[in-house]
Figure 1 (tube, rainbow, N blue to C red):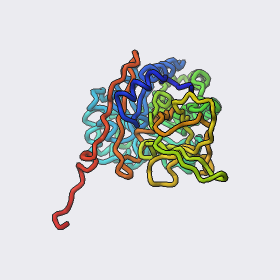
Figure 2: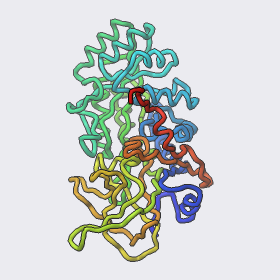
Figure 3: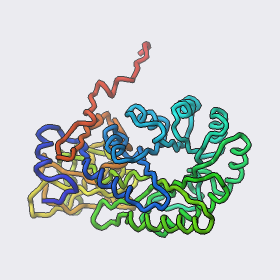
Figure 4: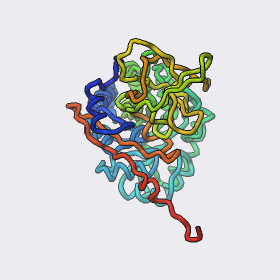
Length: 418
């Protein structure tokens, strides 16, 4: 029997009796444990932890995280609206967005949502509507990036995120000229586990802060790497936290400025708190010199990371067999790239798994972050799947109903001439 992160055979069997596969299931206990690890970081002058909503925006997940003491990082105006509808106070939400519409800008100013300008143009739009004397945050690109791939690297000269650090003087002149106060400074470089990279990012961001005398809050973003497989390395929160704390204490000694620290974890909180429960639909092969394909009833319409990043997720059959078989695990979408066992160079990478039969359950782990939220919903007209959460007593609750075909078609309009 495989070792699951938070599930076991008894829980899986009970869930299968009550819900048809595929479905997502999350663990409240794992989420809360991860939240507490972040909140324990030794920030010498105070800490605000913001959950990166984009990782998993389900309302139930937001409420579990809010109840631990977290604030929120929104990546779009719509995530802001989602939070407000969930009853989250506006002053707990900060918006950092690649686009900013006038309509929603007025909403966030009216509601009192914190705004983090990612460009001079965004700052100009904000200044045109915000009262003079308003406090503002700016996101900078410190010139450093870190990530497992180009697609997860959001810093450095190849990244469009944030204001290039050499343009901060221009931004400050504009803010001063229109009566805005830059009191918060934000940077985010991408996923990384190396404390030395975090030290460098903090130092570069502080160098910019020295040009902005009213800044009191330093936000270093998130990107804490999480191991989904046993051969991967998770970020040591203790090591990163202590490294950043040492940088902040040194800055206080040298300049007298004591910065309140903000962090924005997403993956770290929920990645290993979620699994996609599927079934084996078919098993085929391409002969002795080919492959054996394990076809499951889920795909890139539900979990896109393997097709997008060649990301590795543990795929664990609910099987007691001691016999091992090499399987290529494929999704149900009509795409050759719909694979769950693919290498970084985009070639097939068979997994050695216990012998599995058609109809068996298979658990895809590490599926709590950027899976349901980043899926290619309704591709091939497959419905969005149900989502469940296990409470502290491992009792399951539905937090998203399975989508029906009528809902998929609800917003389509057939012109009268057809």
